[in-house]
Image (tube, rainbow, N blue to C red; front, side, top):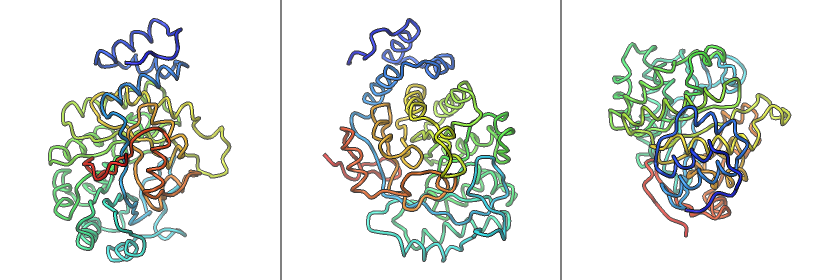
Length: 368
């Protein structure tokens, strides 16, 4: 294994290096120490080593489309600029057929996945959400439906009177194959109260994913960082995900989401620094030793920083996306999507091997 760049590493960092290289699990205190350290090159190289042991130089992406059936939402999360009230200017709720028509206008050969999230619209019944998936599944049977967050699933239980398992089984019958990772924000009920995250609490978020895993689904999970949370909150979040993964082995990828300001014109002081983004990706890789992939989400951190992230522990650059709306409603300055050719260029430009995948990380094509 290569030697670390910085020769002046202190004793505590040396202990962490030895733990990672010996395959020992990092503690809460270790994770907080890494966040407090300014030795980003050592942290990055250690995360790179951990990732290379898991994935070699392969970096994954998928041809997918982001779809949003409705932006009407009963929740009022402090960080969200996507949601609308029913009847508010710019609000919408599309029928299944309207979404099929939209997809037909924008889809191109090679799309393998629909990534579907939206508002918690209590003006329509649970059956609406079932029928939405059914319409897509019937029109595009070869495209995987990765739909709804754990928070949306919890919302469906409330408007339907069904349990989590019953909701998921009904959605599976309509074509659901995987859950998105959103709705996690920071897994701290104190944080959720302060940020007005009046949707699924911590236990409920974890319960939904646990149940999905028990039903055979493999899912994604996220962390939205960069607001009021502490370093300890972030590391605790990772540890709770790690503990559930020990139990179910159902998470495929962890996605650190860099908080976006509410305006595209917000100053750089209202945005996470590149330093903080790279450090969070690296620490995620080091803490989450039992999850195969850490995603660098170019929508939030930009394409060039995504390339750098591939040397800091990331092994996934998401996908083509096509018209991302949630982060851009909040002020993201990045492209709304990339082409397959651009993603291949992005990964190769970082000295890595691009691999087109399906939703479940089966390799479709390796671009040597």
